[in-house]
Amino acid sequence: MKFLLYRWQAYNQMALEDALIKLGHKIDTFTCEIGNIEEDKEFEAKLVGYLAGHGYDAVISINYFPVIAKSCSRAECKYISWTCDSPMLALYTKSVFLPSNYIFVFDRQVYYEFKAMGVKNIWYLPLAVDVMRNDYVLKDYTGKEYQSDVSFVGSLYEKNRYDEMVYMPDYIRGYFDALMNVQMEIYGDNFFERMISGEIEEQLEGKAVDISGDEFIGTPALIVANTTLGMKLAALERRKILNMVSRKIRDTKIYTESSTNDLPLVKNMGKVDYIYDMPKVFASSKINLNITLRNIKTGIPLRIWDILGAGGFVLTNFQAELLDFFEQGKHLVWYDSHSDMMDKIIYYLSHDKERAEIAREGNLLVRRKHTMEMRVKELVKTVQDA
Image (cartoon, rainbow, N blue to C red; front, side, top):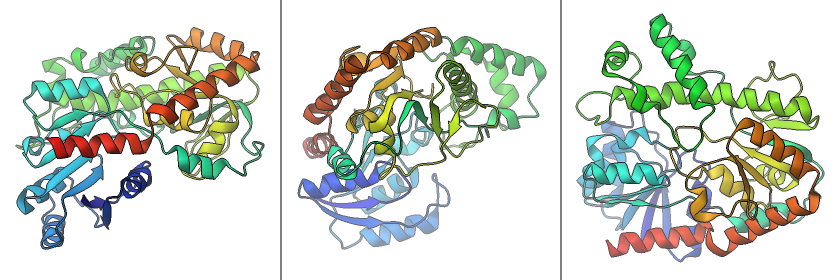
């Protein structure tokens, strides 16, 4: 097939492009900046004009862009999108029903929700990792530069919408604070959206909602739950966990651009390059923490695949779909509470052989069943057979 890849700042975009090329497909790229993801007439005119006469079988992108979906519909060209964020709020627009769409989502619960809404061209496709690129990056790496007992790579979301919502009534803020305290202790179920009533929606509508108007098919509760409460909870939970771990494990490191002034025992190593440095962190950390954004309902985040693909040991919070792909204690380890997490960190730091064997088995499983090429092959076949 001949693809036009919309290139933007997506972590796994290069892996997608390489996999398509390795599978024998023709790839061109389109890099025009999108001003408004819902409607951008200048972008749409450029893309429609570019598609004319080039004979592309499909436009493809990481994540979904309504303006690309509309452009492809006008140009009578297929639009393939594969989400790596969840929920992808841009999906909650009327453009999602366009018959030229071929939408792939990595969160099974999100897939079920859109199927129930009547979206026909949507499929569940978990994320994956480019193990060959990791092998290339790691082939001459000595394993010393990024050594640590426990490491975490990611944002602490110190700038979040919740803290900026000065107009929020005190009784709503108190209610939300209580919700976040409870949700922080529960894994396997995100109840934020269900707990935002019509009255609260009315109070916040027009203030907490970015995507609006006739095109939006979601609810204010959806937006508040994910862009406001979800990010604030991530800020609270990640700091709580890192404080807890660093009090007991002296060699605890974080790789982030976020401020860690309130984490005095955590060593902030700064940001690392996703392609050339992050695999080294994963390969040489004894324990790689994954702390999933609660916005991801059941799916497995990209970070877990990345760690496994680099041969690292994963300790992650529980996600329902882990049960579909991995065995607890064989391929990776998950925890169901913060105290359980702490117990497992202490245990696996003192059981080197067992920890190394789990990391090895996890890496072998990814190589056998979950490479980027395997996923892309499945994606292309699905589109061709649809």
